[in-house]
Image 1 (cartoon, one colour):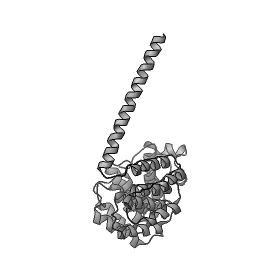
Image 2 (tube, rainbow, N blue to C red; image 1 turned 90 degrees about the horizontal axis):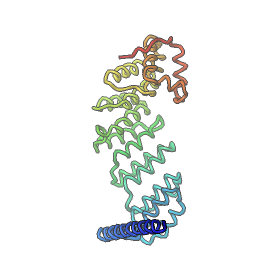
Image 3 (cartoon, rainbow, N blue to C red; image 1 turned 180 degrees about the vertical axis):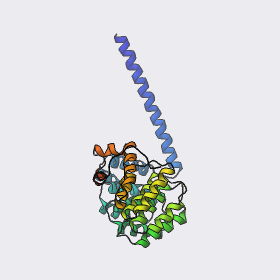
Image 4 (cartoon, one colour; image 1 turned 60 degrees about the horizontal axis):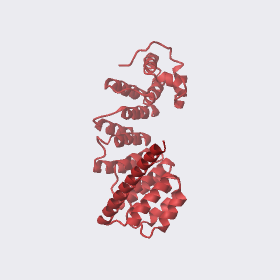
Length: 306
């Protein structure tokens, strides 16, 4: 019995030593690679520590390590800025960002814009976008997808147009950047430029359900109920499956035009796709108005709008 335990202990010890040797070999290769590529070993290691502390939510500890770094690089500062933004501390994030003479990356700009749009400070987000363009840092598709959802009727129409023009210039206004295309449609709807929203919509060669939902909702909010219903029919004929957001917009439109026959068909379609089940168990809070509207529509079978 003792011999068996001794053998197992030796086996564990051998495996542990082998693992440690592998780790030392790996560390040596990493250090060699860092030196070969010109990176400072201490800086690189400190960056890893800062990133790890931020990942665990220890922002103050991460800042302490950052401040004590003898040689910081752009990765160091960008990582710290990102950590502050994610912890909702914009003032310290901007303090570091504004002090950067060089090294601001598209990721850093985009993260800051995301904070502004997420906190309904759209003017600052667009101001930051213009500053970014002047600095000759090119936005990517994530930048547009982050900035444009901040549009509402308080945002000047020309601001959306400027962002759109930049997206066109960089080729982000077409597939495969469908997310950017969809938010462009939504942005023009929000600033009451339905005509431009339709232009963008028609230029999208491979639409998805979000594309249709966005314009259907835009039509309904603008009181263009017939257009909303027609687009829903086009959506169904093109093979796209409606969602709760689809029915939310189109059922309101049907109530708006008082077409109860069509309403009955849509109600049946909603039931057959499981949408009504979601409403029944309260999963969609925004559907309360739809339920009230549907109460005025006599229930018929599960007919579909083709």
